[in-house]
Image (cartoon, rainbow, N blue to C red):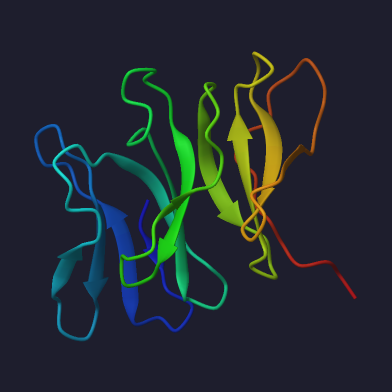
Length: 146
């Protein structure tokens, strides 16, 4: 699922490179693609631009290969300053930015079912957004109606 930058000039996507799945950034004006996660063990899912286009969030098991579960990461849109926002043994996946770009909402199997959580990009504080026995899937964060 490619993700278009807010200015419409760049495209984020995940490549399938025979065991590697790096986050790729393509400049739509030039057609040039850049590997933003060039490490040998890079494997990413669901990269998405922040609302201002300055950051990218994605899911990856780069810090937990032995556990085999994804965490949620954020990095600069140019590929630097990568941080793990969640560090949790359960599977975290499908990150989406809040409309103000201050939080990332994601699904997690922390309770045994897929529920929604949010993490503050600045503090790393995580909180549950839903608590029930069913599954939350395909969430989309939208600005509040005024």
